[in-house]
Image (cartoon, rainbow, N blue to C red; front, side, top):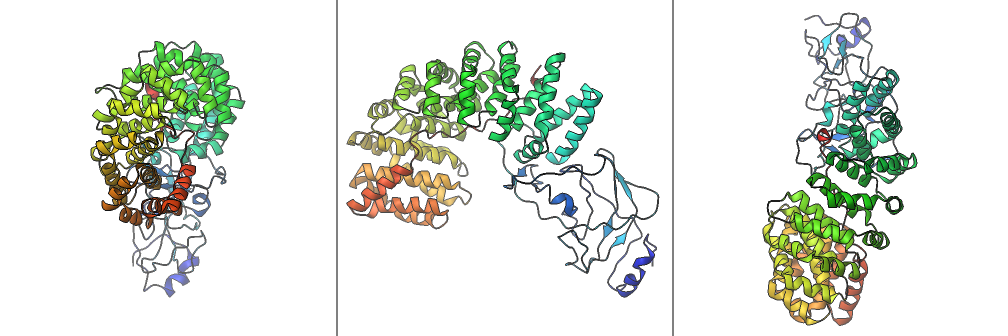
Length: 593
């Protein structure tokens, strides 16, 4: 039998199980990848799954998708990540092998399983960038390991640029420890490199949350103030602060430090378009609540954005300024303050200049988002229409084939209407909005179901805008009823459709069946609408199931049942806004001067 490095204490165990153990004369190899947390990784009986120490894996509860490098967020926001009790880079990792004949031998609790037979091999030195190599010396003490769980699906990103795999970067704690050392040494080159790594790691929301919980924001604020006083480059720090402003608590901690006010004052003298884009994006990311939006409006942030949007010719600066203006319009009162500052003509002219066939779809979507966010009341919608918002909205809906552009075009058209806003409905119908909506379900790929929700939202708003026969005849004549049934079938056939899309479609059937009268209800029933709604109700959450059942009641019930169902639908609909937040990607910080 080949000789292996082992201890005398384990020889009796070796004799008792010698018939089940297959040993090797080669030292085990340690496969340690730096992220997600510089953990000690050891290959076990299942080589395709990494194995992490229980004390570390329980703190860093993150599932990575090896296919695309993305991260599955964790809902446990109460966990805290304790610092490792060692230097951030130098670890000595002993390795173990387990007997392959004992599939149940791994303990998931970090305690050695009674069925596990450890075989000790040589120590291995592992650095953050160096390869693993054997080290001389005596065998290492026993350290129990656990098998890793299968990798879960990742979260898709809207960013089409080549991303950075989080598993190739250090963890939040290691970065912060190194940043503290670099600040004490006043090493600007190392500090800048670490801040850039924070930006790349923070592109994943889970990693951004971990850095916030580890105390990254005070470090960045201190670094921002130091660079302001010394005249250094601050755009990387601005990008890092913007990425970490992912929730209300993070944003408020930054604002209370005075950093947002300093950035706003600094941005007023900015001449470079890239700096304007980064500043608009960073401050827009901090708008996580109504109170923050109100404070920014009082501090003059909309005036700065309107000025940049009017004077700048850089598409990145204009994109992020329009997005930040739309983000500030969180309530009717806040939208009214923006209207008083002149946001309507600015955003409308920006939409007219952007909504051209050769434009970037991202720019068109952001321009539509800004207009839709301001259309929170009938008065504001009429002002937008008078300024020229209807024609570019309808034109993009009719001509574009991009799913995102169609999604936000339909959403913006729906946001322009409220109950008893027959004037707006007539303007939109005159421009051809009904024909554009009718072709939308046929113009998108089968898996792009998000646009179907905006389509249903616009149909529901059209149905309530005028209670007379005019709108109903226009929708039927354009083929919107057939398109609604087609969208309902398409959404029910896609297993991973967002339940909110099913709810929007069910509400649209409710509104259209109630306002359209017996003719439209009969047409929907004859086309199989009731059967489709029943099929959807069997595979969706309870809230969406109730929406489908309400739509079935509107189509098949008597006059009293229809009245009750229509009242429930009207109460469930979001009349105040209807336009969600836009998930914009961050600027290219490498282009900032």
